[in-house]
Image (cartoon, rainbow, N blue to C red):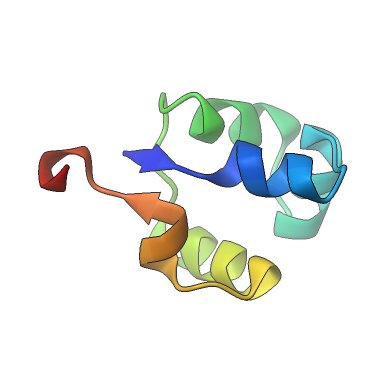
Length: 66
């Protein structure tokens, strides 16, 4: 799954640790999601969408649809 977490995080000058704290996950989880090694759970995707005030589809995109 492709995502824009790294870009959104960088726009806010947040580290992976900062984002992890906001999402209540580990920094390693943020790193794995940003690199596409791990797809977020639906609750985590909703949490990210609320944090960034964006639709889930604007943050996460299924690679099959691209």
